[in-house]
Structures are given as structure tokens and as C-alpha cells.
Length: 135
Image 1: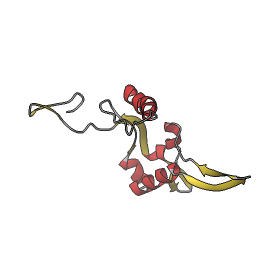
Image 2: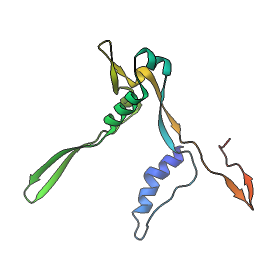
Image 3: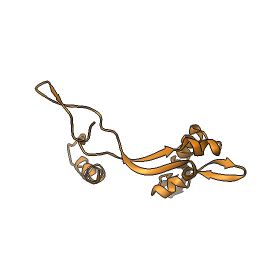
Image 4: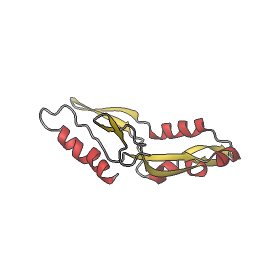
């Protein structure tokens, strides 16, 4: 996962910046993801729905415009980036209120690093074989 992340965020942009390079396609490795795994029992006890969690996370990670500022002949666009810096930022997102108390993602779900499920097969001479990491 570390090598794939390095490939996607460091190597790929450098290769793509080269003259005449139209695209750089990554194959292999585990694709890093942040997983939010809701706990149905905790959600029920705090009257939180999946829609509440989805909507709160979406709002917390949206980009928004702040307008623009003119300086001479230049215009500077102001925007707010709703990008999480670490897992605790995600855990602190307010999902709802229960009995007047804020309910956060960490109150109703587990947040952690995982990887995207592998998809596809590997074949050779029309004989199916399993790729490493598949079940």
C-alpha cells in the first residue's frame, strides 16, 4: 500500500508532467482508502441514520467558493478546501444531536485506513489464475 500511494502521489504526477505524456496508468498494489464503518447498534441508540453520516461527511469535505479579490489587473479566487488532514478530522465531524448533545462520526462509526478491494483476474493461455491478494 505504501508503494502504491507513493506511485500515485509522487511518481505519477512527475511522469505526467513530461512533454508528450498523455496519461500514466497505475497497475498493482493496494489502493489506500479511508474506511468509515458504521456501528448499527450505536447508530440506533443515538437515532442516527446512514443518510445522516453520508450527508455530514459530504458537507465536511466539500470545496466552497469564497468569491474573489481584485488587485490591479489580477483577480485572485478565494476558496475553502474541506479536505481532511487525518483520521481524527473525520472522527470529529458532527453527524447530529441527541438529547442536545452533538453526535460525531466517532460516536457511531469506526474510522480507519484500509484498501480498495482488488478486482479482476489474471489469465495466461486462457487458463484462469488468481492474482496475489485475491480470495
